Image 1 (cartoon, rainbow over the protein chains, first blue to last red):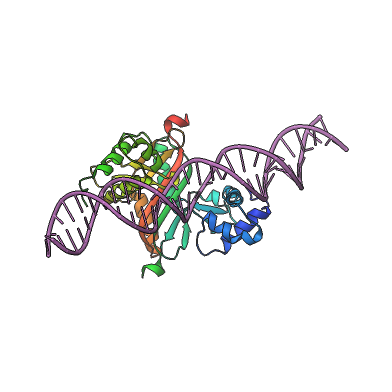
Image 2: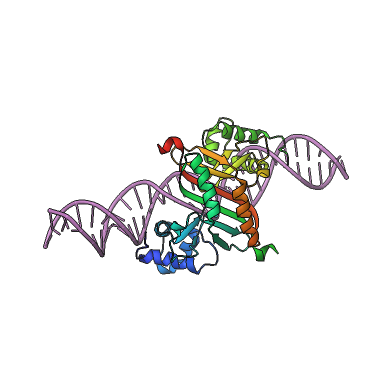
Length: 132
Length: 132
DNA sequence: TCGCACACGTTATAGCATAACGCAATTGAT
DNA sequence: ATCAATTGCGTTATGCTATAACGTGTGCGA
């Protein structure tokens, strides 16, 4: 799937996420876009839904927040599983992909005849800088 | 760490989770315990916090729910990472542990000098029965 | 017996997410 | 040209998830 042209709201939300240094909650995004005319959470959530669908934004389930994909040009959906390391001090997120982990998980799921659809792999802790 | 004696509220919450066939939200637990005198969310959350600390209950971040550990007798915290396959039809959860995946993830984190503290691995999809 | 730690109860509030309505613009088939 | 279907948008209201802040009671060691 190739990413279609983004609408005005989608672009605004995506830009905010791209500029952010750390994941943002939907309500934080809303606040940052009030000057651009955003009034209600739904405006943010609707844009996010699409951006997630296009694979240019990721949702971090463990912190109810959203980040721009680390490589929005390629299509993240085709990379297999995505994992995240989230620093609890500075908020920074490192996104990574590991085929070994993918295969191993997929094999296990297969052995259970479990049809995987969505996956969440999130490690919380402290990044190199903050752990010092 | 060995699990200490559970308090009354902790026992009530743990029993509800143990009897449940699927993960429960905190508010669902609350409703199930109204007859036992529960009135407020905090009673549930406080018990859950302890049960999570003891490792006899897991939190499923991607669905804001809680499940009893699949093997509460051993100590789950010493098993390395825990992963879950969550069926979106029947709600059933399969808990599993894979050292290969652990190592692989841990190696990667190490290479980034990232100090891991908590991990979340959750796969949503359809179980063997429901995928048919 | 004083002080501390801990579980508990209650009220209030904060934070995250979606339902349901209606309008406007676009597209594309008839 | 026109109608129907689709999609995005705006608004109000509501529901679900989680915690803050206060106070009470109980047990236990110094």
